[in-house]
Length: 110
Length: 118
Image (tube, rainbow over all chains, first blue to last red):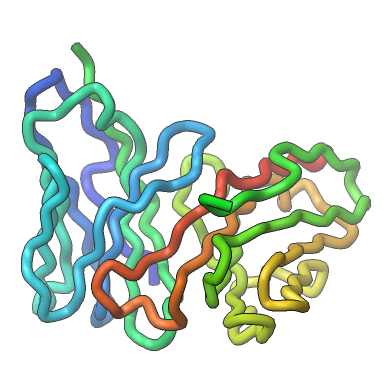
């Protein structure tokens, strides 16, 4: 089952904050966040594991609530370079198959 | 090489033609994945290799799709008798280890092959 991402799209002014959510109906072992710019490969941002803590990457951080089977990506003080589509990929254990959500489009304007 | 590479980057095929898409994973990466990404959607799993063994092909949409990785490095995704619904971006990804559950272990994607079937 594909995880559900919300919102579908976000428009920000530079410096504003945003939260992107990813929820699954299946028990999760890991959540992987990627950003993809138009016509480019998805770029890995971070991974959260079951039992793991909140992770951070510059001004981008994420949390993983195992009970609710949800993860949230926090973008603070957004920059123009943050524009793109954000995908969460969920793993349910086993080797490494990821199921991706439909994506959240983020546009940051000056 | 430094990253995952794919070729060709763009492919236009007439309906009914066979196509072959190539993926060069990061050197030494054990796991290799193929995904199909439709316009405006997330990547959708097609198949997975651990070295040369194809351990999961549950995502291949039909028997027209075939993938191989004979020597455990380069992989080829072949689509026979292409149909218009096969038009999509085909992404290849690799990871160092067989299991994604280790901290920091994830998949690294190539730039994709954009296939257009007319």
